[in-house]
Length: 113
Ligand code: 5GP
Ligand code: ZN
Image 1 (cartoon, rainbow, N blue to C red):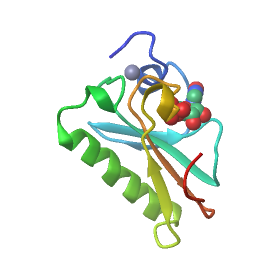
Image 2: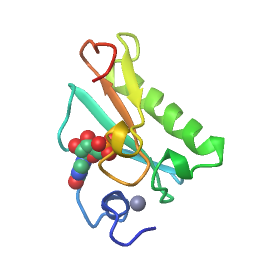
Image 3: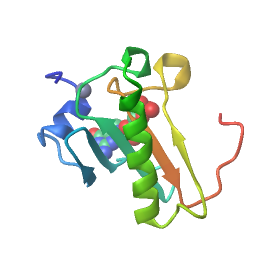
Image 4: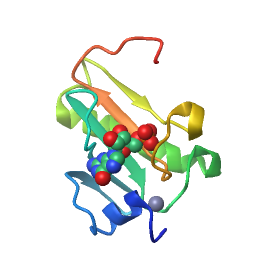
């Protein structure tokens, strides 16, 4: 846990969020500034600054499978969705707690900007 990390504070419920999943390992909640009709962030409970800090593949595996489960529950599994992990400056990461974006409910263009 990082005392002043925004997402650690959401995990501790010091900051409100619209939670859609809570387990021993992961938490998921709606993005405050959604970029698609469905925009959920999936995060590990244990603080990690970015993907660069992960050595256990199960951490990322769990994020991906939680996202797929939420996609089914949100009704976008068949139409499709995008999962994204932004890392550091060039990747566009703005919150330094590893998170996987689940975006769906509209067509996604490629390549990303
Ligand atoms: P990044 O840019 O680091 O890949 O993604 C960070 C995401 O966190 C952004 O999409 C941003 O809208 C979202 N975000 C930032 N602050 C908050 C907050 O206080 N609550 C929630 N639910 N989302 C946030
Ligand atoms: Zn954190």
